[in-house]
Length: 139
Image 1 (cartoon, one colour):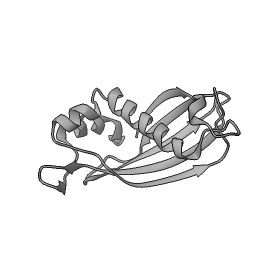
Image 2 (cartoon, one colour):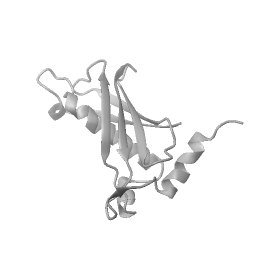
Image 3 (cartoon, one colour):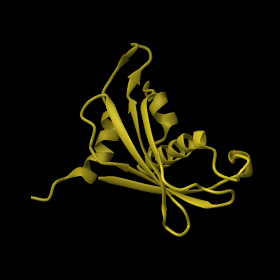
Image 4 (cartoon, helix red, strand yellow):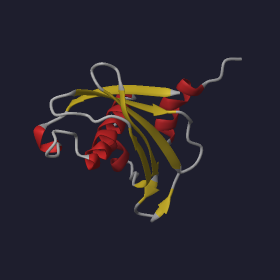
């Protein structure tokens, strides 16, 4: 399993009138977590795009447990629980407040897409190679 973490401070413009992180902004926090997870592997979305690979979102599921509040420092934990063997990749996201309480979790499914060919494709080999060591089974 691959796990990455990053932190985001809830900005005033991201909140509703109650000072809660607006529900639609959780997906943006998941995206920050995904981008930073890929960056921690030594890759960027930009590099994937330069290789001719796009990663559109196919599904998003989210569960809200507690609100994130204005000025809270949120830890976004991003997990890959499975090494993708097809065109689909699932990122599991967990958001925690500074006290370590779970606020929200979700699963975002993306696909590897080759826009020139207008079809789904498999994960680029270089990214696969960087992820594979995190999924080796103990013998």
